[in-house]
Image (cartoon, rainbow, N blue to C red):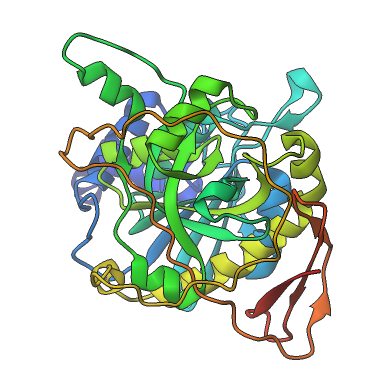
Length: 378
């Protein structure tokens, strides 16, 4: 009688649970999980409190400080299909279930980090299929910033919208052109940005570290504050699966500054990753158990502008920006730069120095509470 009550499908389900969700999961099963998980979420304002967060990170240099900060445990065996390079960790922050996934490395090219759009989008889809849809997904990492939009080395930005600036697909009706840009809007979290002391702005994505003049023109037309290589791809997956999404990016280099992007990026990557760690911690602790809607903009600036930095040598003139285009949702794209001065740090301990595009030293330090930090430009 007992044998008749236990169906074959149920037996297989128990077996998979016992195996820890075996690495040998069929692609059909991955699709089924992702679709089922996505049905419980809405695009921007989930009806329930934030209890589960998924972070997607492209570089090991960016993910290691986060893993150490939160004391995360690597998930073994890997929850992903055999051969997938992705690595996942899990932990808890203020009662919040946190999954962090790193895109891993590519052994064909000297074990380089799997950066850019393809790896990020596939990694996120695999993570949602493995863990279910989170209440919030965050593309966390480092990026270039535009001085013309108020960005400085060491700043951290929360996305207001993500776009692609190198997917140029003109067509007669304009639909493919706008599809190329994407216009993936993040929840309007102005209050959250002010609360944790970060700026907000448009994040623009491509698969290239540098940018050609046409890229720069298109980014200016979108009011871009941050240029990077993953966020819009992650945002597309999140929109498709109805998962709320934001990008949290720490500035390593100034796109419209005089210094070479690669040189400035490599010099500041470690320090920017540590600042990202601090702000990610603050964000998670703020949203844990809350509704994202309560962190929405209220129509006014909730924080004063950050103190101006000392004058720097003038950057080379940028190409003239074309007239602002209108997105498919009927809104004109503009830049948003809400910022709040970082809280004062008590008895700070020094962390690596970064150098901004004006060659003036930027000393960063983190307070003993592990939360506060300050940036001193001298």
